[in-house]
Amino acid sequence: MTRNFLSLSLATACALGMLGADAAQAQFKTIRISTGFNRPLWVGAPEGDTRLFVVEQVTADIRILKNGVIQATPFIDLTPKVNASGNERGLLGMAFSPNYASDGYFYVHYTAGASPGSSVVERYKVSASNPDVADFASGTTVLSLAQPFSNHNGGNLAFGADGHLYIGYGDGGSANDPQCNAQKNTTWLGKMLRINVSSLPYTIPAGNPWASPTDGILDEIWSFGLRNPWRYSFDSQTGDLYIGDVGQNQIEEIDVEPAGVGGRNYGWKLLEGNTCLGSSAGCAIAPPPCGSAVYTAPIQTYNHGAGCSVTGGAVYRGCALPSLDGLYFYADYCTASIWSLKWNGAGGFTNFTNQTATLAPGGGLSIATITSFGVDGFGELYIVDQGGVGTGEIFKIVPTATPTDCDNNTHSDACEIAAAPYKDLDLNGGLDLCQGLSANKASISESAGGVQELKIHMGANLGGKLYLTLSNVSGNSPGTVIDGVTVPLNLDSTLLSSLTLANTTPWNQSLGFLDAAGRGQTNFTIPSGTTGIAPLAASHATIVFDVGIGAVVAASNHVTVSITP
Image 1 (cartoon, rainbow, N blue to C red):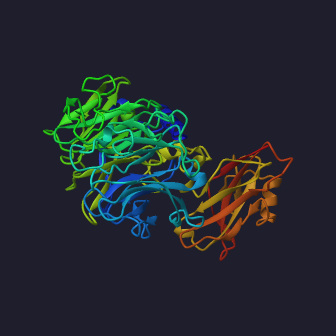
Image 2 (cartoon, one colour; image 1 turned 30 degrees about the vertical axis):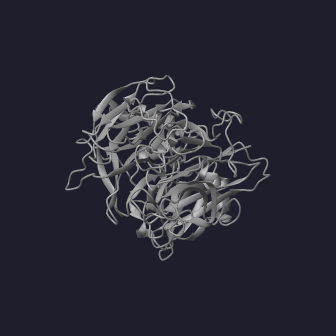
Image 3 (cartoon, rainbow, N blue to C red; image 1 turned 90 degrees about the vertical axis):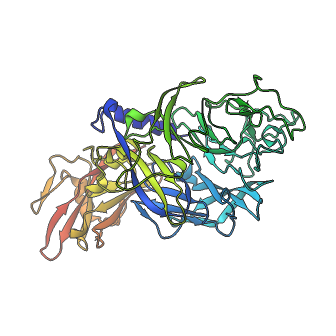
């Protein structure tokens, strides 16, 4: 998955001091970034996306949080399909396709029908006309599983570094796995599945441990012996899978699978954590006894003196807090205790820390019923507090020293630039977005053609005024002075052409009026099949006219585009 490379680039940028902080001295806290959700239990985003998507369990909505504001229209409302009766049913999880930027697919996991009903995984596609709305009619069933009881539905979804979809199911519910589902070969209950959804119907990935048609085990099964995997996630840098598996009456556990290592059995219902229960009641074929090499022990457990229901978390691989790199955060739903540790790559861990007090938000706020941890499009970590109807909250782990966030989207400018260098095409360390002109890409191939979208942000004080976007091929220094305003482009024949060909290719829509907020857009277009231009670098800047006085009154920063063969 490309998120591996994002993690590496962010870590590298931070190591080079982009944030101006000593990683060893980094301090952190939580801030509440939004409230008013209806029993939220998942938060996340596609890679590089500045929005957050929040899953609401009982309303069966997925809401978008944009620049700290909950959008009025849900991304999708699955109420007609979802039955949320009971505490453990409803809309339970979602995952974005690893190729979401190009294919627009996302996946949801929900319960349907009267209790106990069934668990359904479906694929949807974002609207072709509005990135903040999904196409409800695009829903396609990936798989469905009848449930024997109303609880232990699992419900999480996650894509691994291999590009395959991992689906975690609980043991079917009731208590003590009365049907022995977690050890049974012929059901998905109590298992982790791995399937290939690059096309539908899904296929079985090569390397699934029980893909043989003669072994009597369902081909989709990746691992056995789970009671109720409540939140699992992949380390975006290593591909290792971390699973929080909820215990029965005694022990909560964290399991870790090294990347690509399937075929494991985590022991339920013979084992609860490392504790041998020894029960094989309901098992048509008795599983191996406790102590057998077939079982994989958890890396961490805690008993019910410290909590009652584990909420699996995520490994931090963001940019804003280098000192947390590689730490896995997890919590307990009942006590709201939060811990972190660093897996040692074998059967143990280091750096175990109780983070509850450190992450208490203060100011009269508290983090209570933790249903999930989430990761945004830049690798930063969030905590979901379920609350009740209309009182669910999202908290973010942030540095105690407030980083620069010029566009107020809750993401550090330095981290945005580290993840997407084209956001600082004038290479001055600040977001182009906040300096007047920004671009959606840094290069265009003349043979393939393409469009560089140039967004203009000149401020409300210039709203309604005439703008013109200019281009040249001779750089930005020392620039050109027009009506006393320095425009960061050197004068050359290309600039003179852009003045006279304001709305023709490649400077389409370069002349217009800014809206009331001082915004506009120019499209720099290279038609496919163009020849004779590359290799070439072009620079752009926008000037603003006050028609009333007949003069240029403002100029933006410059951005560039590299035209390649």
